[in-house]
Length: 378
Image 1 (cartoon, rainbow, N blue to C red):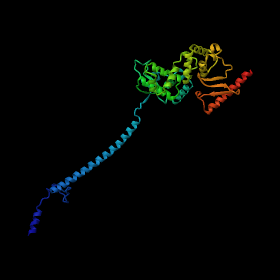
Image 2: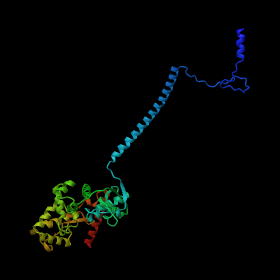
Image 3: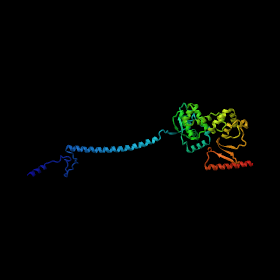
């Protein structure tokens, strides 16, 4: 009886109102129920579910932060490498190509015109031409429009010969630009030229003299301290620069003057200046060719040793030593040896020394000897 009542109640139940049911559907097949996510029915269960969700979110954020930290470490490493590389260039100045016409010589220029035309200069010029420009930059400083001569915008600190070579070749000159005061310019010019060992004693003396005359340094000692040279060496250079013009002009070139000649020449002038002037005049007008050393010896010889050749200079009979000249410079000598033979010496100033040079030189000597022999027979 009870079972029939339960069956009757069950038959009267309407499931069409349940979620996911279709009231208008005539499909008699089994209904598709929506996905069901169980929810906690108690407070502890809800708290546990919330904790799990929060933990998952924290794990995701932690992984994101770890990835960002890893990327930051990579960027920091690259930055450290870049900073380390930049430190290697700390204080360095960039070089740029400049039109030579925009650069003027320094007011303390220490180069004699012979330095811009001799064998060494021609060698430097050829090297710059082969390289397509000066590989070693010169240094210049900016000048104001008021100071600029003929539109010059820069003044040479050092590198006058390289500038001249580029000017003659029609090339832009590679230069480092730096703002320097006069004293710093002078010190850098002097040290750079002295380190290259191609500045003559007389040129150094003239440079020191200009610095002192211009008031850059109050005394010889302060100048010597600034450029780092011995005070006695500075004095010898200044003594050469103080020689009168008639003494300098007696030599083929002032570039031939040597430091050790300064005191003897100064002593000779102090002892008898008119006699030295007379000898210098005779040497300058003599048809004979004298080396720089021979001229020095004549100028510093005693009066009793000077006879003949006009006003007190003895002629050489015979002239046993003849200088070998190249581009107005003495590069060697030819002389009669004790055994009657002829000795020839060619110095390093000639720019020779390789095996092909020696072969060519020997060939030229053979041709010259043949011509001399033929002339004597004729």
